[in-house]
Amino acid sequence: MHIRTIDWKNNKVRLIDQTKLPQRLAYININKAGDLCRAIKMMQVRGAPVLGAAAAFGVYLGVKDYHGNSWRGFERKLKLAGKYIAASRPTARNLFWGIERVCHAAKINKDRPVFMIKRAILDEAKMIIEEDKASCRLLGFYGAGLLKNKAKVLTICNAGCLATIDYGTALGVIYAAKDQGKKIKVFSSETRPLLQGSRLSVWELCKKGVEVVMIADNTASKLMCDGEIDLVITGADRIALNGDCANKIGTLNLAILAKYHNIPFYIAAPKSTFDLSIKSGREIKIEMRRVGEVTSILSQINTAPAGSKALNPAFDVTPHQLIRGIITDRGIIKPPFLKNIRDTLLRKECV
Ligand code: MRU
Image (cartoon, rainbow, N blue to C red; front, side, top):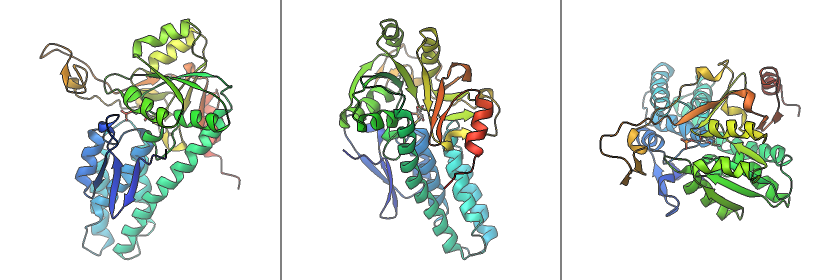
């Protein structure tokens, strides 16, 4: 089954509403920046790479109705639209990268009529979609070499086609290995509180015919003790220059457990997730979400007494010392990360 998380259709952004999964595959069509911002906050669209595309389209929606014809006036509107979308969620680097991409596309076309600048922004957003499709496949190809036939892989959250355009990062590695004829077994950690692991990863792995076993988040250690896990692979939301990686809360637990059990722990992420402006993970802003997400099951059943105190950081940072390698669309980056991230990402592509 081909799943496309985000698209530009009939002058609207078409998204899979991920809050409706796994009950039903529903789409929403959006033509206002405000609605797109809300969809990001409510996590109807979520996952770092697809947030890059969504943010880029969000900026376009924010400027598309500008009627003036001066660059100055348009630029003001563009900056406001960028700021507005940027305020939706703070952690995923890709979201800001998507905004920067379209703002740059506008700037290099600033001497053209406004309607052409708008078109350049829309074209750039569409290009992000195409690039993501290609980079996930490339990343999957590099990562698949790490997986032997019958490998048992643990992952958390959703870093699959629903978090990208149509393939995935951590799960892209699994799909690529499957396409090479390998049989892979995936353990998907449920991912409290919003259950991306069980609702989304299990859903898409099943659709793609990959064997998947869902576990509660606190089961990982037992599986590792029992020799059931060969490798841990997760996605990332922001990667610092030294290789520290922010990803879904609970990723750090897995990395520490993997270290204890001597199980390789890999991150899979495209170039757009790296933030070369920050030296370490300490500089990554971690999103704090509503405590009601923790004190209930999907805001439907309360699992704690009314008024309970709770904490809900959406991400944690895995220090680079716990990471065996970062699988990217430019190959697998190994330690020492400080040198190798810079060398790999700043290297010009040889065509
Ligand atoms: O809060 P979410 O669901 O947006 O968090 C997503 C993750 O943590 C993913 O693992 C990450 O974005 C990588 S997606 C390829």
